[in-house]
Amino acid sequence: MNTPAMLDVFKSTGALLDGHFRLTSGRHSNAYFQCAKVLQHPEHLSGVCGVIAGHFSGKGIETVISPAIGGIVVGTEVGRQLGVKTIFAERRDSRMTIRRGFTLEPGERVLVIEDVITTGGSVAEVIELISEAGASLVGVGSVVDRSNGKVKLADDQFSVLTMEVVSFTPEECPLCREGIPIDSPGSRITNRN
Image 1 (cartoon, rainbow, N blue to C red):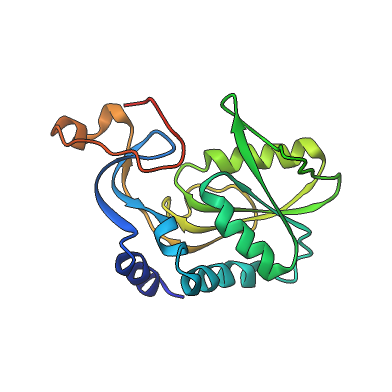
Image 2: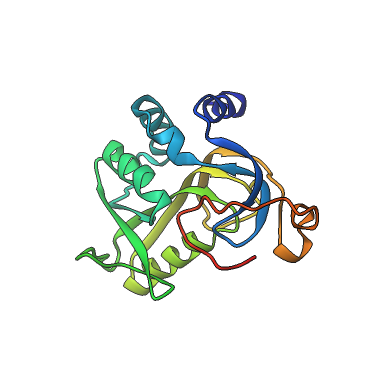
């Protein structure tokens, strides 16, 4: 699936939004990728996750872990296609944790899957959990890498759609200066400007 085809999927499903958005990272942008709108369609979910699973097949992955909430659907389908266990990490008291009886064992080969990477903060927190458990990071996969490959989280990092989408700190945001109302469509509630 090439970049124009993937962008067509985002546009046809109403998943590529234009406006003024507060991203999960706290940064602001004029574009937002609402992956859930793509992934609600089984044919897109299967196709996109198949590309990710294809990249990581044959690499001895034992577990797929995703940061909640955005990465759960993608991670579950990638894990299903790879035929491995899938779990997720979630925030508790502002810290990413592994709960619900999920565990990682020392030496376990783990793949991290996310929907959209902007700064990579949530993925970095999940990688820290993998390290704390003594498990082994195989790689990081995502549907969209908004950094155009500038955010490097693993030696083997793969995204179906890699492109640079401009984002700003709240202090430097031209959309704020223009007084354009802001929307926070992400899964994590932020109180940042």
